[in-house]
Image 1 (cartoon, rainbow, N blue to C red):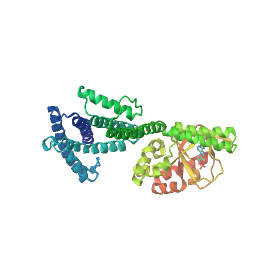
Image 2: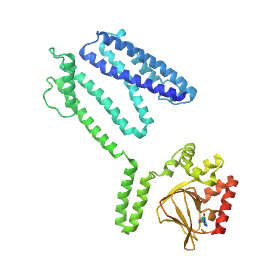
Image 3: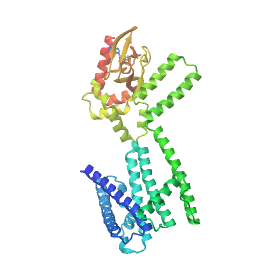
Image 4: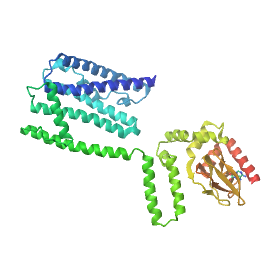
Length: 420
Ligand code: CMP
């Protein structure tokens, strides 16, 4: 129901955007071409008035339902119809054709463009992953409207050529505008009065700004198409410079490169812990749960565990990556953490020989935590491994609340110790 309503709101916003856009095109055009008395112009104005009046009702209704549902839709965040928006909507909805013969006043209707700008801000907030593309699309929208307005302005300064049709007059003004804005300027249409020269100079300055904005944005979009790749390449460049500076041996350099390549390929270049810890607590739990649910479900130990336990453990586990050949730790070391395997294969090495291998869903490192003794074996990554790490403090805190799971970990620890 709510989704349906949001969908309807979007469709309505699109309809209003369409009406505003048509008004932004036709009102200046009929002003410079002197088409006020044409029946289509009067009908169009009446239809737009009806839509805009209806829009005010829609916003009142939205404000009320937003308050009732506690939802936030565009401006109705607090469940009220903000006064300034009411003023904008009401002014734009006036039946100008009936009220005044002074046609320039009809331009007041274009104040409703503020609503379009607001929709655009809203759409960009809702789809940040497409932010750059949307910015360029919206920029294109404003650019097309501005070009049209500038052409209308030029037409009104130049006056109509009596021998030509309206359409021909408009297109020659548009032609002048585009060649001036794009800084091409063939010079086949030149200003002949002071007012026209001032106008032309202003358009030229505006054109240079527009040109720069487009180039800057396109470069920005290209650079941001794949932020993970950009991050990876930047890291690699910094690393290579550092490794060469410190004369790190080539074999070690390759391992470091392999590590970063793996992070990038698996889209782990984003620092998950930092991103999550910057969120408010309730969001932290939900995001952690979403990211770690897979691994938690794969660990037999956690099957059937309560939701509270799963939430708590999800929040406390930190992701770590090991490359093939890396030791997670060595036998005899003091142990302060245990690990859960999300992906990859590791081997348990004791007395100089591999005892067993562990895969996705297994856990290790619990003996040192449960029995408070040094590591009984070394653990080495056979492939690239994604692990989640739980440190001693968190381990104790979580398990003190969940004795069933604590008992299972303890019995696994004892069984493994006897075997090892
Ligand atoms: P810990 O002693 O803290 O560090 C080494 C880990 O290897 C150990 O905890 C267990 O989790 C794991 N381990 C030890 N022996 C075995 C075994 N025989 N089979 C599987 N895992 C083991």
